[in-house]
Length: 450
Image 1 (tube, rainbow, N blue to C red):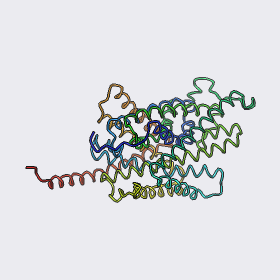
Image 2: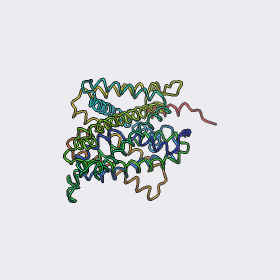
Image 3: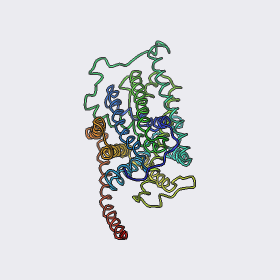
Image 4: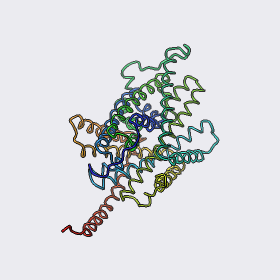
């Protein structure tokens, strides 16, 4: 693969795995899983396993390219190497826009969690405070970002494990026989209570729970040994898949299925049913940390992505300016501006309309995953198993995205995502003329060697 290789850093593979746990366990899991439960019931457990496998296939495609040749610019650079400048341009901007669209919903969710304690504080003020705190962590640089995400990861994973332990103590009657109860499906038809269509339309929300692997891919460039990138992802996704399935399974055993709504986390629903008020407050704090962690990861990744886009000449060169501490401050300013627009949009638009936009952002994130897979198929010499993994990833993402067409709640988001992709495609058509002209001009300026 071409391009300049990125210098290796001092990151161990197990540290990257821990960072990956922090990047992925955010509001997509702690809150968005309620959407999946409402759509599919107990069969959501199968969907989490399927999505974990699909996510591993995607990350393994990216990690295998990193292991072979650590590239400056991460996944956007691989798309350029595989298919040309149009692909790198499209991939970079699709990813940047997807994260910007999602940022507003993340801040809104964190604000709503905080209003559980401070109901009279305006939502816009809470969103602004968390936005400033997030930018503050990004300003600390890569090292500060890593330390913060490591702490967030430990807190979130510990909370999930404590919930699992609590559930076991409740179900076994250790915490009192009056609490010992389970809401289990009585027969196989109860497990698949919403049928095949329910599972199909829910798969997209389960995939959102694994969003963050692309940030892990960006950080993989800092590994001491880039060949450890696949191992980091395998360990991280194995751990997180187990945690997701076990914790969600226990949550559904502790509370009646009809109690789960899209208005609150399934863990809060389960704990509320047990009347554990103190623990509910603790978990609300965990939800805030989870959301804030995802916010910081998004801010960091889109800032880095915009810098690489600008460095490649696909955005104004002004955005490549850095501070003495190597922070691309102009790219960060653009990200902050985009985040501000996203927050204002979230607060002003009707809730359903903004949900459509954030669904579109999530779908565009999956489209960026497809770029990674197709680039791997182009750049790597794949074994038979490698071909199966990449084809499997494409099929699963297609199934998840197409399922939105049959769900009135997510269908508008699908068409909005296509509109954004079409807009980027139109820009690419105009840019290709410019690229071709610049290339011809450069060719004419080069003097012959003889």
